[in-house]
Length: 335
Image 1 (cartoon, rainbow, N blue to C red):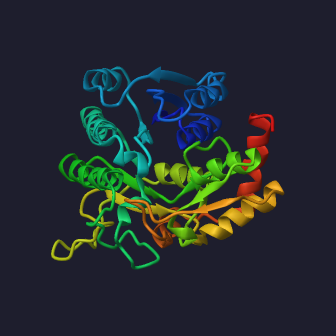
Image 2: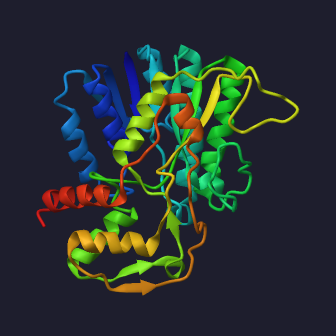
């Protein structure tokens, strides 16, 4: 198939593109290579993809409506895997417009491109952040998520609503994936594992928010990729059991689905730090700080729907995933 992967120079996009190339598909990777974090890391990921004869790269901003319309007009994509987004909860407090441009305007351009060319299946990244103030765990795609705690989360919730509208109006199969704290080699420098590893190796103190009373459902990158690819191959279908009198966020008479992709095993933040310390053989100096605005205390994924529909549930042990990241980090940064 010919597949568009947006955010192909990003952490998840890079691994998804690589997996699809290994499966023999033609992949067009799109990224704007912005400087939200070190662009050289994005270029290094791209350098791993460019030798593939079935890979081509376009530097485009998904918020550029004319360029996106031209892209879809020039190609007949069988599938679109939309992973490009402005990420990060804390950065949304500093630069909110970036989230509207990329996550709302950009997503609209993706939906319009899929509509105009009748793409066979759109798979897009949502986030566990949409659960917001929800205190019922594990988080289920069948729960209401109308109380986001950050603009980032609100934009991802808006993506789910927009996707359902297009699936309903134009019968485009659309599947949203709520990712839970993804980590692993080639990861994002703004994420906890990357930040903590860098600072511990440099002998610098690390900041522990909410005085360490956080827990996260850390999900290894290989499990995320497996979930994305399996879902892409499992085209969303209308739910014949759907009842309009009691709508469920994850079911619809439209060809629309939502899944969590998480390790379904939350880890306390201090246990996470301890695992990094054991792997590095160094103890971190910790600065305890209060909860940050927009943050949530705990994430915990219910992945029953994913397991039922695509036959997969993430299961990589945290210690194994951290060890693989640290091995990559030491090699990449020669430490």
